[in-house]
Length: 105
Image (tube, rainbow, N blue to C red; front, side, top):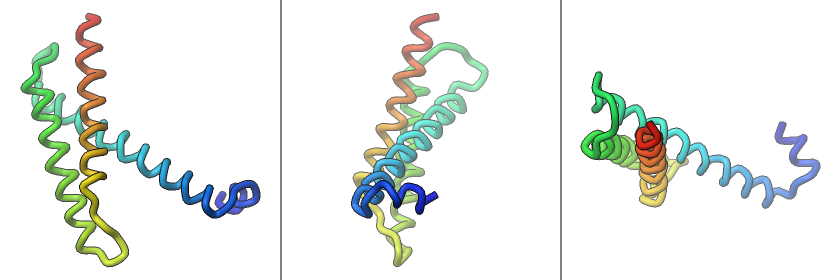
Protein backbone atom coordinates (compact mmCIF):
# COMPACT_ATOMS: atom_id res chain seq x y z
CA UNK A 1 0.00 0.00 0.00
CA UNK A 2 2.80 2.42 0.88
CA UNK A 3 4.48 1.79 -2.47
CA UNK A 4 1.22 2.56 -4.26
CA UNK A 5 0.98 5.94 -2.54
CA UNK A 6 4.76 6.36 -2.80
CA UNK A 7 4.48 6.45 -6.57
CA UNK A 8 2.31 9.56 -6.45
CA UNK A 9 3.33 11.31 -3.23
CA UNK A 10 6.63 12.60 -1.94
CA UNK A 11 8.00 11.35 1.40
CA UNK A 12 6.98 14.67 2.99
CA UNK A 13 3.44 14.30 1.64
CA UNK A 14 3.27 10.72 2.92
CA UNK A 15 4.40 11.89 6.36
CA UNK A 16 1.74 14.63 6.35
CA UNK A 17 -0.93 12.13 5.33
CA UNK A 18 0.21 9.74 8.07
CA UNK A 19 0.14 12.55 10.65
CA UNK A 20 -3.36 13.63 9.58
CA UNK A 21 -4.65 10.03 9.67
CA UNK A 22 -3.19 9.38 13.15
CA UNK A 23 -4.75 12.58 14.55
CA UNK A 24 -8.14 11.70 13.03
CA UNK A 25 -7.90 8.30 14.68
CA UNK A 26 -7.17 10.00 18.03
CA UNK A 27 -10.36 12.06 17.62
CA UNK A 28 -12.41 9.06 16.58
CA UNK A 29 -11.12 6.56 19.13
CA UNK A 30 -11.36 8.86 22.10
CA UNK A 31 -14.70 10.16 20.86
CA UNK A 32 -15.99 6.60 21.05
CA UNK A 33 -14.46 6.24 24.51
CA UNK A 34 -16.15 9.46 25.65
CA UNK A 35 -19.50 8.26 24.33
CA UNK A 36 -19.07 4.88 26.01
CA UNK A 37 -18.22 6.67 29.27
CA UNK A 38 -21.42 8.68 28.89
CA UNK A 39 -23.43 5.50 28.29
CA UNK A 40 -21.85 3.80 31.29
CA UNK A 41 -22.66 6.75 33.55
CA UNK A 42 -26.20 6.96 32.19
CA UNK A 43 -26.94 3.29 32.85
CA UNK A 44 -30.57 2.38 32.18
CA UNK A 45 -31.73 6.00 32.24
CA UNK A 46 -32.75 7.87 29.12
CA UNK A 47 -32.05 11.36 27.85
CA UNK A 48 -29.07 13.58 28.48
CA UNK A 49 -27.64 14.96 31.71
CA UNK A 50 -24.54 17.09 32.04
CA UNK A 51 -23.22 14.88 34.86
CA UNK A 52 -23.15 11.91 32.47
CA UNK A 53 -21.32 13.96 29.85
CA UNK A 54 -18.78 15.17 32.42
CA UNK A 55 -18.23 11.59 33.55
CA UNK A 56 -17.52 10.56 29.95
CA UNK A 57 -15.09 13.45 29.62
CA UNK A 58 -13.31 12.60 32.88
CA UNK A 59 -12.92 8.97 31.86
CA UNK A 60 -11.44 10.11 28.56
CA UNK A 61 -9.10 12.56 30.27
CA UNK A 62 -7.87 9.85 32.65
CA UNK A 63 -7.27 7.25 29.94
CA UNK A 64 -5.64 9.75 27.56
CA UNK A 65 -3.35 11.07 30.31
CA UNK A 66 -2.24 7.60 31.37
CA UNK A 67 -1.71 6.60 27.74
CA UNK A 68 0.46 9.63 27.00
CA UNK A 69 2.42 9.17 30.24
CA UNK A 70 3.01 5.53 29.28
CA UNK A 71 4.35 6.65 25.91
CA UNK A 72 7.03 8.74 27.66
CA UNK A 73 8.40 5.51 29.11
CA UNK A 74 8.93 3.95 25.67
CA UNK A 75 12.15 5.10 23.98
CA UNK A 76 10.71 5.13 20.45
CA UNK A 77 7.57 7.05 21.49
CA UNK A 78 6.82 10.37 23.08
CA UNK A 79 3.96 11.62 25.18
CA UNK A 80 2.23 14.86 24.33
CA UNK A 81 -0.15 17.11 26.23
CA UNK A 82 -1.45 18.21 22.82
CA UNK A 83 -2.59 14.64 22.16
CA UNK A 84 -4.43 14.59 25.50
CA UNK A 85 -6.17 17.81 24.46
CA UNK A 86 -7.00 16.33 21.06
CA UNK A 87 -8.39 13.20 22.74
CA UNK A 88 -10.58 15.31 25.01
CA UNK A 89 -11.80 17.25 21.96
CA UNK A 90 -12.90 13.95 20.44
CA UNK A 91 -14.83 13.13 23.62
CA UNK A 92 -16.36 16.62 23.68
CA UNK A 93 -17.53 16.25 20.08
CA UNK A 94 -19.15 12.93 21.01
CA UNK A 95 -20.92 14.60 23.96
CA UNK A 96 -22.18 17.39 21.68
CA UNK A 97 -23.55 14.87 19.17
CA UNK A 98 -25.22 12.99 21.99
CA UNK A 99 -26.78 16.18 23.38
CA UNK A 100 -28.01 17.28 19.94
CA UNK A 101 -29.47 13.83 19.26
CA UNK A 102 -31.38 13.92 22.53
CA UNK A 103 -32.65 17.45 21.83
CA UNK A 104 -34.20 16.30 18.55
CA UNK A 105 -36.23 13.63 20.35
